[in-house]
Image (cartoon, rainbow, N blue to C red; front, top):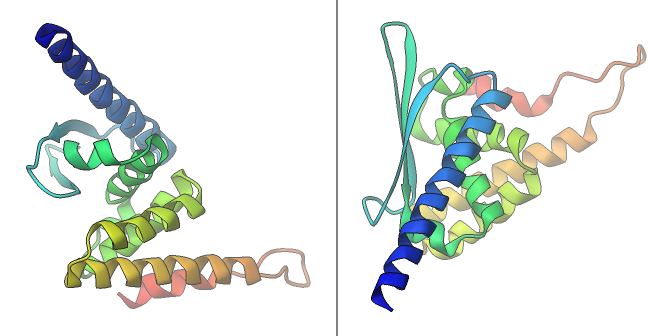
Length: 178
């Protein structure tokens, strides 16, 4: 019985890591970042959430994605895809240049909305507010959710000009201020 339980755990662990690896590949390709070399680490309680480290060495983009296994086990497959999309979003060139940490988080949220439905990103942020009730994280997630909802509202209000083209996206204005 113990052997069966252990084999089930090993299979689930490797299938979870394969799922993450395939999803990272898919999203890097969609963002034309498929030349990025990366490693995925799904570990127990190394951190509470997810993170990505990115650097350039000899002209090559390198990245290490860290995901908390305990957190992943609490999320549905679609919620995991949202979390992975957010972390991959940090590698987008427009999210790389300077700015504060909150700017980089907002930028990654915006990029993740291009990889998965925006409603799913908003739902994951709302779930994060409940999952991380301590003050600093809760406040940040609430701010990010409000910004995402505002971006969606503005993008829905864009109307065609007289020549038939759309006005430039007003929601990009915040990226120029950071």
